[in-house]
Image 1 (cartoon, rainbow, N blue to C red):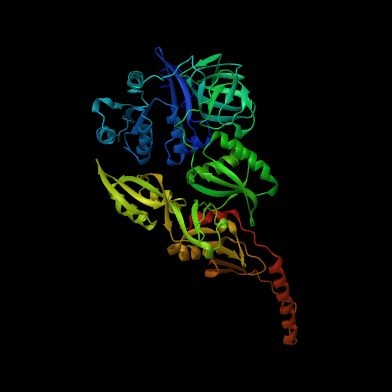
Image 2 (cartoon, helix red, strand yellow):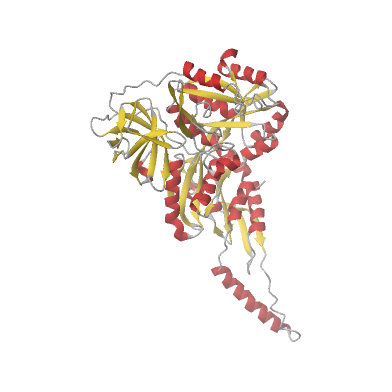
Length: 566
């Protein structure tokens, strides 16, 4: 589309996403906005990620759009995340244009995929466009369909300014650049503007439209999409979903329909060197600008010192953030075991929200605990159905429904505890289905559950970064496997290290890392046995003293090993 509208002059083989990570993994992490001119029309396109962990990028892009292109792979068919993104678009009353891509591939099945799309959205055969991004087949039809089917934005250029911020990026030289869509009114370069939610006022140093690069303009009016540079340095002053208006003759009405992000997975992120704490804070703030779905707050741990409790949308999101901290900001961090938030009801009837096992009240004060549940949708071919059922039921899933789709594919819907899927569910699903199963989920609230806090003790001292909340039935096997794994990973000391798993005061598993022995009797040859005993007693006292003052360093790979216990 970019080539056909002459937005892009093709100089290199392909135009990939900006980040190294996106290019290496072949996925979109950050949505991209661009403006194209076609005939006498201006088209504003946002390219969004497809993975379930980045659905927040999709939700805020949909809030700023009038229509959506539903692109389905001709070789794969409809996938679970396609369905969830489609429902999001339908909720916002967007005009949907169904497209089948990769029709030029030898293993394409456009007829079967067409039937799946018709089952899904109830459109007619002739409304579906067959295309190929590689050969350019069908792209002209897509551009025509956009012009004919998608309504133009409704807005009044003479009304007070209302512009929705749908994204922001951090530029080290120009500060924060906010991307917006103008709903009503007109904005001019050099005007004083106000951000309604934060109440802050700025001068619009530069405004413009988004081509392959930023393209400055003097004025932008209703229906247009653009960017604003106003020298903002503090990350917290720009909120995605905020409304921009002018200081003079502006409006006080914010644009509604934009939902706050809800983190699903929580993990502690700690700097390896304690003095890097402030650098880590600055790095996370800059990352938060590029990725509004990241949330964090300071916390401290006995074992790891000061760090942050971060909220992520999922495990891939957590992995990407960790990788970006390392590459873009050169920060070495330790990440603790990921967990979810629980509601703890005490015997007085009060409710506490707990993100971290260390924040759990004493077991004797707890009446009951509720954990978050999700409605999970898995789409797969029938040959992998049995294995996937076994996996979901093993993760305490309850089968809700099972529907056969055309072409030997089946959709299974489960209700599952979120805590069971945050660690390794997605990896296991992909491996048992050889990559053919697609997975998507949405939260459905909290349910009571029999959960216990599992502590790991090293020489009697609890390591709070390794403690987890787990279901009572799984606690014993999980504790035993944790101890066995830690025994392999902890370096040997000159004294025995006792590794114990405990629920409250009850020890449920134990392993010992044997001491590195030193032959103290080497210099004592012959003579009375009491001389040998004297040397051994002296060594014993030294070992006892060493055990009292010696501390056990837990290596980073021990924290990561917990995630890959199987």
